[in-house]
Image (cartoon, rainbow, N blue to C red; front, side, top):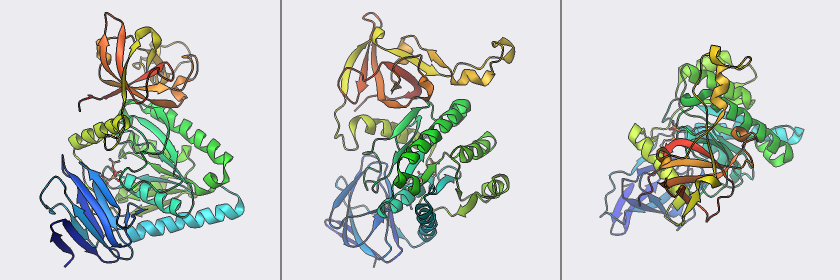
Length: 427
Ligand code: ATP
């Protein structure tokens, strides 16, 4: 029997190539421990007899190549195990082969002093794109590589909060409980939760991110050889398809991995240059589909985690900021007809323009990026951000805001970029 319920929790015996999957229900916590053997969570190895805690909303899969025993318990609940099951059907062998192919390319790059593989992962929503990125980055890091993980999925930020695009260098495997949240990413402000809202800005930022990654790769042989893994959002039709092609071009990818969409696979094979390898990979049966509302909750949780930490381990600060101490902008003015624009200006240019925002009650609860730019005359749009604040109160009479910030006053810089995204700071 694979499953044994005891007073301390439920034990699962996993045979080689089995996967134990569980979801943590709202307001629940799951504590997991590997008591024998070897196992991994999305490519990150588990330590034996260490207790890992997963909070509400987590969807976890423990995979084992060699067999292991896992004990899980629900401290807030009396022994329910309905949500946990073992699956023998996983695409992990295909994912491992993909990793092996990338590693071959790295070995060749190392020998010939060339650039390592750049791979982009595409497919519809909820097929496990982010998870595959995590697995591939972790497998690479376990071999001593340091790939750059570029995340352009603005809806469900993995490297930073939603509404941003960015990258980080994965020098060691992700934390089993916390993913990459302990690493500091390089991020650019986009401000919206879908690329559709401002594709001109989205494309500009992708170009910029690719440029920065090229500069970083040129500086370090290890980074250069390790390559880049790019996560995308699930917009694959119409303008979304054009975006995928442009993104592949901007990052000069060598490999496109299409998860679970034969049509997209065939279209990309037809349309991308012949030297780009396009491969079709299956989706894992464990990937959980998320409703619009659970996507919203996941976004909220990610912003909360930025300020409060995964387990409320961080203590953010609340302080007042005078209206005159900050300069607020949003990126993108409404597109005007060409006939109303100055000579030589394209309608799309307006979408990447910085527009001053006057203090008003409508800023309440919005998230703002703190730009690293020193002055509004700098290229603010293409400058990275230092962090985020939320305006939690506005006093129009006293002419000041109260902000929720990760560090004490003063703000590190005074240019704030407004996001569509809002966050209600309720504990
Ligand atoms: P999106 O389109 O929103 O970017 P995605 O295609 O990137 O989604 P993921 O975020 O990788 O999909 O996966 C969706 C959810 O499924 C995640 O919460 C992830 O932890 C979970 N998941 C992925 N693989 C498995 C698995 N094998 N077993 C259980 N849960 C899994």
